[in-house]
Amino acid sequence: MSANSRRAAAVIRNRARANRAEARARRAAATAARRVRTGPRSLATHVIATGAPLDVVAGATDALRTQARKAGIRGRAARIRRTLNGRARSAVTVYRYTAEQVAQIVANYKPRKAEYKAIRAALAA
Image (cartoon, rainbow, N blue to C red; front, top):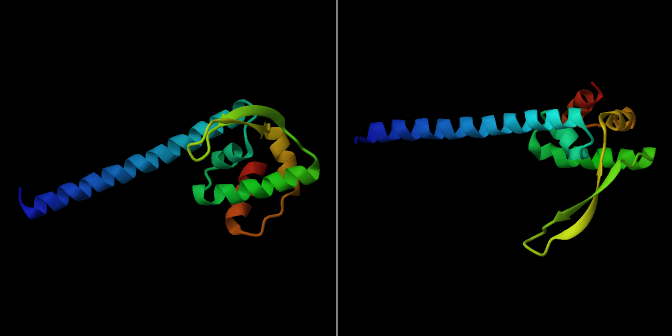
């Protein structure tokens, strides 16, 4: 096999890998959107369902959680078992929000960053 054909094979392999990663991200966003429509989910799931980049999801979720606290919207409590840093699984209380509750939270949310403004517009729609 010549150097050019190996290089060409590597380019095709890398392109296929990138395409698979992109398809995986699209499927994750579509799955999250379907789950959000069907019942209460975490604020992070609602944000992911907007198609937001994963590097801004945590920040937007924290801001929405603060607005929910200010508005007095609690969501439905659920207990999950979470593993942290390989330690034993411990029970944690999490909150799940319906689409209507998220709409109430977003009504009070006034973001400054452009990414967060896009997320707010998608959640308000």
